[in-house]
Image 1 (tube, rainbow, N blue to C red):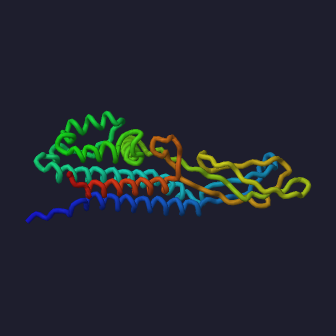
Image 2 (cartoon, rainbow, N blue to C red):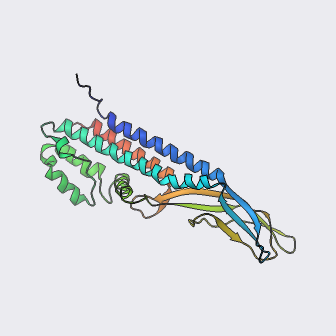
Length: 256
Protein backbone atom coordinates (compact mmCIF):
# COMPACT_ATOMS: atom_id res chain seq x y z
CA UNK A 1 0.00 0.00 0.00
CA UNK A 2 1.47 3.36 -1.04
CA UNK A 3 0.93 6.15 1.42
CA UNK A 4 0.53 9.63 -0.01
CA UNK A 5 1.06 12.90 1.78
CA UNK A 6 -2.08 15.00 2.41
CA UNK A 7 -2.67 17.67 -0.22
CA UNK A 8 -0.48 20.77 0.12
CA UNK A 9 1.26 19.39 3.20
CA UNK A 10 4.58 19.60 1.38
CA UNK A 11 4.14 23.33 0.75
CA UNK A 12 3.16 23.96 4.35
CA UNK A 13 6.08 21.95 5.70
CA UNK A 14 8.43 24.04 3.56
CA UNK A 15 6.91 27.25 4.94
CA UNK A 16 7.18 25.85 8.47
CA UNK A 17 10.85 25.09 7.87
CA UNK A 18 11.41 28.55 6.42
CA UNK A 19 9.84 30.11 9.51
CA UNK A 20 12.17 28.05 11.71
CA UNK A 21 15.16 29.45 9.81
CA UNK A 22 13.75 32.97 10.16
CA UNK A 23 13.47 32.49 13.93
CA UNK A 24 17.08 31.25 13.93
CA UNK A 25 18.13 34.42 12.09
CA UNK A 26 16.23 36.54 14.60
CA UNK A 27 17.83 34.75 17.54
CA UNK A 28 21.31 35.03 16.03
CA UNK A 29 20.94 38.77 15.44
CA UNK A 30 19.63 39.25 18.98
CA UNK A 31 22.63 37.35 20.32
CA UNK A 32 25.06 39.44 18.26
CA UNK A 33 23.48 42.66 19.50
CA UNK A 34 24.35 41.59 23.03
CA UNK A 35 27.88 40.68 22.01
CA UNK A 36 28.87 44.11 20.67
CA UNK A 37 31.30 45.77 23.04
CA UNK A 38 31.98 49.53 23.07
CA UNK A 39 35.13 50.73 24.85
CA UNK A 40 36.98 54.02 25.38
CA UNK A 41 40.68 53.98 24.43
CA UNK A 42 43.67 56.33 24.18
CA UNK A 43 45.95 56.60 21.18
CA UNK A 44 49.47 56.11 22.63
CA UNK A 45 51.04 58.22 19.87
CA UNK A 46 48.80 61.30 20.01
CA UNK A 47 47.11 61.08 23.41
CA UNK A 48 43.71 61.57 21.79
CA UNK A 49 40.84 59.34 22.82
CA UNK A 50 38.76 57.09 20.61
CA UNK A 51 35.86 54.66 20.85
CA UNK A 52 36.15 51.11 19.56
CA UNK A 53 33.13 48.94 18.74
CA UNK A 54 33.76 45.23 18.19
CA UNK A 55 32.33 41.81 18.92
CA UNK A 56 33.38 40.40 22.28
CA UNK A 57 35.04 37.29 20.85
CA UNK A 58 36.23 35.81 17.57
CA UNK A 59 33.46 33.21 17.79
CA UNK A 60 30.91 36.03 17.56
CA UNK A 61 32.28 37.00 14.17
CA UNK A 62 31.84 33.41 13.03
CA UNK A 63 28.20 33.60 14.15
CA UNK A 64 27.78 36.74 12.05
CA UNK A 65 29.33 35.03 9.02
CA UNK A 66 26.80 32.18 9.37
CA UNK A 67 23.83 34.53 8.98
CA UNK A 68 23.81 34.51 5.15
CA UNK A 69 23.40 30.72 5.06
CA UNK A 70 20.47 30.89 7.48
CA UNK A 71 18.81 33.57 5.36
CA UNK A 72 19.48 31.54 2.23
CA UNK A 73 17.90 28.44 3.77
CA UNK A 74 14.77 30.43 4.66
CA UNK A 75 14.46 31.84 1.15
CA UNK A 76 15.03 28.45 -0.48
CA UNK A 77 12.27 26.82 1.54
CA UNK A 78 9.83 29.60 0.67
CA UNK A 79 10.62 29.10 -3.03
CA UNK A 80 10.15 25.34 -2.64
CA UNK A 81 6.77 25.95 -1.00
CA UNK A 82 5.62 27.75 -4.15
CA UNK A 83 6.89 24.92 -6.37
CA UNK A 84 5.14 22.28 -4.23
CA UNK A 85 1.86 24.19 -4.25
CA UNK A 86 2.03 24.77 -8.01
CA UNK A 87 2.72 21.10 -8.70
CA UNK A 88 -0.17 19.97 -6.50
CA UNK A 89 -2.51 22.45 -8.16
CA UNK A 90 -1.79 21.61 -11.79
CA UNK A 91 -1.86 17.89 -11.01
CA UNK A 92 -5.29 18.33 -9.47
CA UNK A 93 -6.68 20.58 -12.21
CA UNK A 94 -5.08 18.83 -15.19
CA UNK A 95 -4.50 15.22 -14.07
CA UNK A 96 -4.19 13.92 -17.62
CA UNK A 97 -0.71 15.42 -17.97
CA UNK A 98 2.54 14.01 -16.62
CA UNK A 99 3.60 17.08 -14.64
CA UNK A 100 6.29 15.19 -12.75
CA UNK A 101 8.08 14.27 -15.95
CA UNK A 102 7.85 17.89 -17.06
CA UNK A 103 9.43 18.96 -13.75
CA UNK A 104 7.03 21.84 -13.61
CA UNK A 105 7.74 24.71 -11.23
CA UNK A 106 5.89 27.78 -10.12
CA UNK A 107 6.13 30.27 -13.01
CA UNK A 108 8.11 33.33 -11.98
CA UNK A 109 9.27 35.55 -14.83
CA UNK A 110 10.42 39.04 -15.72
CA UNK A 111 7.26 40.44 -17.29
CA UNK A 112 3.52 39.99 -17.53
CA UNK A 113 3.90 39.23 -21.24
CA UNK A 114 6.42 36.49 -20.51
CA UNK A 115 4.12 34.97 -17.89
CA UNK A 116 1.18 35.02 -20.27
CA UNK A 117 3.30 33.24 -22.87
CA UNK A 118 4.40 30.57 -20.38
CA UNK A 119 0.81 29.87 -19.32
CA UNK A 120 -0.40 29.76 -22.92
CA UNK A 121 2.36 27.30 -23.76
CA UNK A 122 0.88 24.99 -21.14
CA UNK A 123 -2.58 25.66 -22.64
CA UNK A 124 -3.80 26.81 -19.26
CA UNK A 125 -5.57 29.76 -20.89
CA UNK A 126 -7.74 27.30 -22.85
CA UNK A 127 -8.16 24.45 -20.38
CA UNK A 128 -8.38 26.52 -17.20
CA UNK A 129 -9.33 30.11 -18.07
CA UNK A 130 -10.16 31.07 -14.48
CA UNK A 131 -6.88 29.64 -13.22
CA UNK A 132 -5.12 31.51 -16.02
CA UNK A 133 -6.73 34.73 -14.74
CA UNK A 134 -5.81 33.94 -11.12
CA UNK A 135 -2.12 33.58 -11.90
CA UNK A 136 -1.92 36.43 -14.40
CA UNK A 137 -4.07 39.06 -12.67
CA UNK A 138 -4.15 38.19 -8.98
CA UNK A 139 -0.94 36.41 -8.01
CA UNK A 140 1.14 38.23 -10.67
CA UNK A 141 4.55 36.55 -10.29
CA UNK A 142 6.50 39.02 -12.44
CA UNK A 143 8.39 42.29 -12.03
CA UNK A 144 5.94 44.97 -11.02
CA UNK A 145 3.50 42.33 -9.80
CA UNK A 146 3.83 40.47 -6.50
CA UNK A 147 7.03 41.74 -4.88
CA UNK A 148 7.44 38.74 -2.57
CA UNK A 149 7.31 36.06 -5.27
CA UNK A 150 9.83 37.78 -7.53
CA UNK A 151 12.11 38.67 -4.63
CA UNK A 152 12.13 35.12 -3.25
CA UNK A 153 12.77 33.74 -6.73
CA UNK A 154 15.67 36.10 -7.45
CA UNK A 155 17.23 35.69 -4.02
CA UNK A 156 17.03 31.91 -4.28
CA UNK A 157 18.76 31.98 -7.67
CA UNK A 158 21.46 34.30 -6.39
CA UNK A 159 22.11 32.12 -3.36
CA UNK A 160 22.90 29.17 -5.62
CA UNK A 161 25.81 30.98 -7.25
CA UNK A 162 27.38 33.17 -4.61
CA UNK A 163 27.24 33.85 -0.89
CA UNK A 164 24.71 35.22 -0.54
CA UNK A 165 21.70 37.13 -0.83
CA UNK A 166 23.12 40.65 -0.57
CA UNK A 167 23.36 41.10 3.18
CA UNK A 168 24.99 43.88 5.11
CA UNK A 169 24.80 45.20 8.63
CA UNK A 170 24.30 48.65 10.04
CA UNK A 171 25.89 49.54 13.35
CA UNK A 172 25.75 52.82 15.20
CA UNK A 173 26.73 54.02 18.66
CA UNK A 174 24.35 56.09 20.75
CA UNK A 175 24.40 57.86 24.12
CA UNK A 176 28.04 58.89 23.89
CA UNK A 177 29.08 61.43 26.55
CA UNK A 178 32.21 63.51 25.99
CA UNK A 179 33.71 66.20 28.26
CA UNK A 180 35.43 69.19 26.64
CA UNK A 181 38.36 71.25 28.01
CA UNK A 182 36.04 73.56 29.94
CA UNK A 183 34.39 70.68 31.72
CA UNK A 184 31.14 70.80 29.77
CA UNK A 185 29.64 67.41 28.92
CA UNK A 186 28.14 66.77 25.47
CA UNK A 187 25.91 63.92 24.38
CA UNK A 188 26.05 62.49 20.85
CA UNK A 189 25.84 59.46 18.62
CA UNK A 190 27.19 58.19 15.31
CA UNK A 191 25.63 57.55 11.94
CA UNK A 192 24.87 53.95 11.04
CA UNK A 193 27.56 52.30 8.95
CA UNK A 194 27.97 49.10 6.96
CA UNK A 195 31.76 49.17 7.30
CA UNK A 196 33.26 45.95 8.67
CA UNK A 197 33.83 45.73 12.39
CA UNK A 198 35.65 46.97 14.38
CA UNK A 199 34.34 50.54 14.18
CA UNK A 200 36.45 53.43 15.46
CA UNK A 201 35.28 56.90 16.46
CA UNK A 202 38.15 59.32 17.04
CA UNK A 203 37.99 62.61 18.98
CA UNK A 204 40.11 65.74 19.05
CA UNK A 205 42.93 65.94 21.59
CA UNK A 206 41.61 67.41 24.81
CA UNK A 207 38.21 65.75 24.68
CA UNK A 208 37.59 63.11 27.33
CA UNK A 209 35.18 60.20 26.83
CA UNK A 210 33.05 59.88 29.97
CA UNK A 211 30.76 57.21 28.51
CA UNK A 212 31.50 55.40 25.20
CA UNK A 213 27.80 54.66 24.71
CA UNK A 214 25.98 51.63 23.44
CA UNK A 215 25.95 50.02 20.00
CA UNK A 216 22.98 49.07 17.83
CA UNK A 217 23.14 46.36 15.19
CA UNK A 218 20.89 45.26 12.34
CA UNK A 219 21.27 42.84 9.42
CA UNK A 220 19.78 44.09 6.15
CA UNK A 221 19.20 43.02 2.59
CA UNK A 222 17.59 44.39 -0.53
CA UNK A 223 13.81 44.35 -0.42
CA UNK A 224 12.37 42.99 -3.67
CA UNK A 225 12.92 45.23 -6.68
CA UNK A 226 12.64 48.46 -4.72
CA UNK A 227 16.44 48.86 -4.46
CA UNK A 228 16.20 49.70 -0.79
CA UNK A 229 17.52 47.79 2.15
CA UNK A 230 15.30 46.61 4.97
CA UNK A 231 15.74 44.59 8.13
CA UNK A 232 16.30 40.97 7.19
CA UNK A 233 13.98 39.43 9.78
CA UNK A 234 11.07 41.78 9.09
CA UNK A 235 11.39 41.27 5.34
CA UNK A 236 11.65 37.48 5.55
CA UNK A 237 8.59 37.35 7.77
CA UNK A 238 6.73 39.50 5.25
CA UNK A 239 7.77 37.18 2.41
CA UNK A 240 6.60 34.16 4.41
CA UNK A 241 3.15 35.67 4.99
CA UNK A 242 2.72 36.48 1.30
CA UNK A 243 3.89 33.04 0.18
CA UNK A 244 1.49 31.43 2.68
CA UNK A 245 -1.41 33.41 1.21
CA UNK A 246 -0.51 32.26 -2.29
CA UNK A 247 -0.42 28.64 -1.17
CA UNK A 248 -3.88 29.10 0.35
CA UNK A 249 -5.18 30.65 -2.87
CA UNK A 250 -3.93 27.70 -4.90
CA UNK A 251 -5.29 25.14 -2.46
CA UNK A 252 -8.73 26.74 -2.36
CA UNK A 253 -8.99 27.37 -6.10
CA UNK A 254 -11.64 25.48 -8.01
CA UNK A 255 -12.12 26.02 -11.74
CA UNK A 256 -15.73 27.06 -12.26
